[in-house]
Image 1: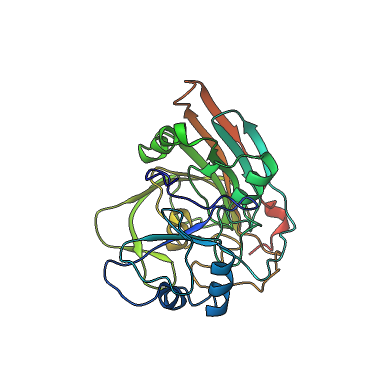
Image 2 (image 1 turned 90 degrees about the vertical axis):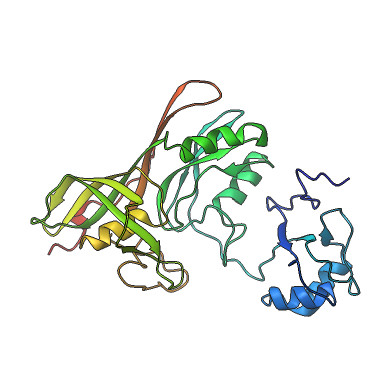
Length: 308
């Protein structure tokens, strides 16, 4: 039966929740034509196959067919599929689990949620299958290239209370990073800038205006031309740490987006981004306990880098 508060009418499959597409408020013709145009990565014949298998259904649970008309505003659910997904040769670790949250230690290169060429090889899907938690959902996200701590919610009933911690900036997040060393740059410092989308791919850039990105930056150690930094973001803008460090002339070692886009070849894991979500600390809104988690992962030793 349709539940307007939870309209996901297809069951989870192998740890993956169904995807949703909302039909525009204006349109006509066949649903099949719309899907083929809106989601061209899925061939028309593939949509017909999925419909025949009952794997495209509307928000009321009614299966779609080749002759189903376009109905403005209606939601349709379907399973995302990948023809081939290369396995990631890394494993996540679970540092903590109770009835409300899971804290995972994510390796470099692993996306948190399905996107692009990754579906089963994502932190969320792996953990759903491994732990048998169908409602598991990330409370926040870090980039695929960033290693370290991710907080996930176990149940929908309390999820909003943990999400509020991040919205209200009630979580202390500390990152570690490796980047070039600049003797002329006064540190520690609080970097306050304005970040907006650059219009190129999904990169961000600094622009004039009221700051919306605030990060505390200090040096832990330096050796030759490189240093290890402690970064503590107050805000949580996309790519905040990477953009601000690059703008200071301190691009993170292994960064393939800033200051230049330089995507590695598929399967090349030789130069991971040297950014680690090292600690998370907060007062648990459900249990009232003070929580403090530290990643067991480590970035490269400075001595292993070519010294400038």
